[in-house]
Image: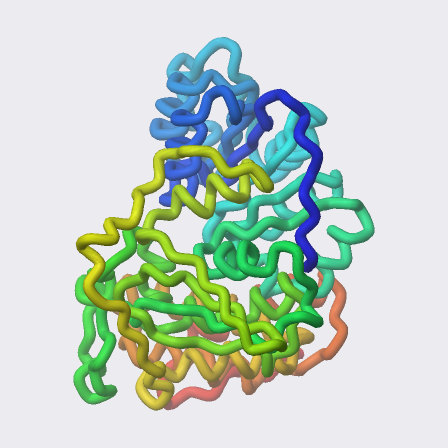
Length: 401
């Protein structure tokens, strides 16, 4: 992806937020709140938390609010929403929001593969998408990037690591890059051996040392699956070969990624671990203005540590590199299996190290297709979830039909 600055319109950019009640969504609203002369909120979409969505609507008075869950949509009390906000339901409501001509930028912050539909509809409408939903590219990277190119739409990264790469690559093409190195904190279990993690609990996995995130992505950080998925995302977002992507552990979470160019120069982006900065950069690109994000305290910064990831203990990372190399149906299967396995772990039905084992087994059992259609990917998503829900260390998944 070669970033090309968009011309300034001289008016606030009009924003729709998918996943407004999650951690990225609420951080996005804080950015909008702090920059009223630059950003205007047109619509919000949430899965089921209608009371929180109503609170957000009373604060921002958007044109649209969407509840994706039909049960929540029926249960929602319209009296809690402002008169000027139209309440919509389901995927049709999301499509209406993201395709509205009044929307300039769609923030795709829904967790998991569920974010694919809204992102797809926005790109088909030629919108700029600020992408926090990495699963969209993990599941259907080639199809999504092709759609964006055909429709004249734009994908701007919100993940802190990919935002760092995007910023370092501005003005350069993929051919100028020798490799990118994605940094990761190592999560709450950095330095632990496999034997110490067999009995790891959800409460322990959710104690992230530097970032405040939702439960699914926090567990992914603990297993290093989040970094695995980011490898696949970087593959498609920046048009890189899998061999051009690396991962390094950086506990301080200050350096958000490196780009090494073919001449040997290395550029990095540094900032405190505050998602409001990459969100703001994606919303206002290419402009940089003062915003709400924290600033680095250079006097307090004493050391920046880097170490190689323990790929023997955290087996998920190898899955990410494998999927980035193979492409095809692998991303959809890995992502779906992981979502189901993390759900089981959080519910107490699966061991921590079994998350990667389950994903390995389901990935190995599927019928690989190097160039699938979107329909095939969605069917495999459903199959992989079912197999991950049924998987045990002694049971082999059913092969794909």
